[in-house]
Length: 253
Ligand SMILES: N[C@@H](CCC(=O)N[C@@H](CS)C(=O)NCC(=O)O)C(=O)O
Image 1 (cartoon, protein in one colour):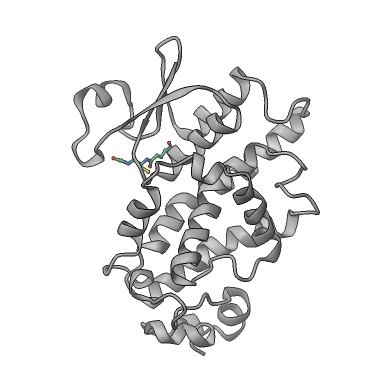
Image 2 (cartoon, rainbow, N blue to C red; image 1 turned 60 degrees about the vertical axis):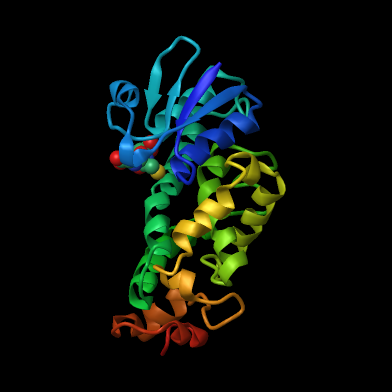
């Protein structure tokens, strides 16, 4: 059976588990402590990072993009019959998604408003790109789930948890992306791709007293700002650190 070496709140792992679940491929998971990586893990993981996926042949695959592409090639495809061009496009949109994982992690860990604004802006520039190409399909470019959907699943799932718990919505100004998020969440893959205690672990780390989002109260003053209308036009994000309450009026201008 395939084995995935994992860390509970890692978005790169979530994408891979999402693929395994979407394709109904049996797998097992072993969680490790990243601050005390076991010797056996370091021996099989060139970068010392999760996910690592050990195949049926005992080969340790690493790098989530490579693992996702392996799963799509080695098992029945999610969307059969795609042209080489379409596959290349899907990979490109998937890479754009996986590049946002660390951007989102750092936005969620922001300790003050200015940092949250800067980091939300970075994330928003990726949402603006997908917003332009999303059409009238429930999923990224189709009526059925594909590679791009799974690459963005961790980002859209985490944005949803933040919004539910704190009212801060990274997608507030991207209605098509929001609809896409809704379709993805309706598949149930978000829950299936994480551990049972994921929300607790995730909010414990990203919504702790140490983070600005953690200190903002649900239904309180912390609203998402519109980076396009507010920051680009009014250039107001150059202001110094703002308090949580400044979000109430967009980005405080
Ligand atoms: N480029 C890697 C990134 C994976 C990654 O950053 N994993 C994090 C956990 S989310 C990790 O293992 N960090 C431990 C470390 O870098 O030492 C991939 O796509 O698989």
